[in-house]
Amino acid sequence: MWLAPGWAAETLQVVTEDYAPYNYLEEADVKGLGTEVVEAMLEQAGFEYTLDIYPWARAISLARSRPNVLIYSISRFPEREAQFQWIGAIAQINFHVFALAKRDDIKPFSQLSQARAWSIGTVRNDALEQYLIGRKFSNLQRNNNHEANMLKLLMGRIDLWPVSQETANYYVRQAGYGPEALKIVHDIEDFTGGDLYVAASLKTPPEVIKRLQEALATIKQNGIYDGIVKRYR
Image (cartoon, rainbow, N blue to C red; front, side, top):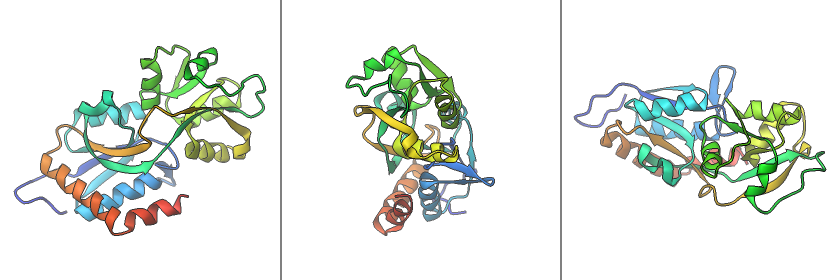
């Protein structure tokens, strides 16, 4: 294990959620675009680590409370800015509100506030849920992951599912349907800057943050990052 001079550390604990195609569990291994970028960064930096998937509420609790914890793929917005040390962006993402394509009663709408007319599936404590709660939405059905939201949407137990296009496509295919089973009824344009990040707990030493930031910059400069991203397009 590589260590910054003069620094002794425990193995870094890396946490994430089941959020394909950025991070997901496949045959007991954590995979995905975000996972590959973070692992390449850690290899470049020379740190040993553990990597586990948890429900998002658990993952973010660990990253807020323990030293030497990294969390990804996490959205960055003002309410979270002071809660973590932000290492850098690892993937681009855009969010939409989906409904079943066969739902002729749900038409595209121009204002997010119009979604209050329908039940919305969210992931407990994730950024989109916090965004909606902050805008006084009370029509939320809170679940532990996006797979639950997708299944509830298909069964008609929720009406709307706010999520990225890539994630929606992945989970609907896992359920045996094509992307045409869903339709976008609203683009959430002001939610984030379009990036997902890797961040560290506040109790993680600054020299570790610096080394990880340098490693992430290196893999973006030497072509490793671009090679990972191309495999998921």
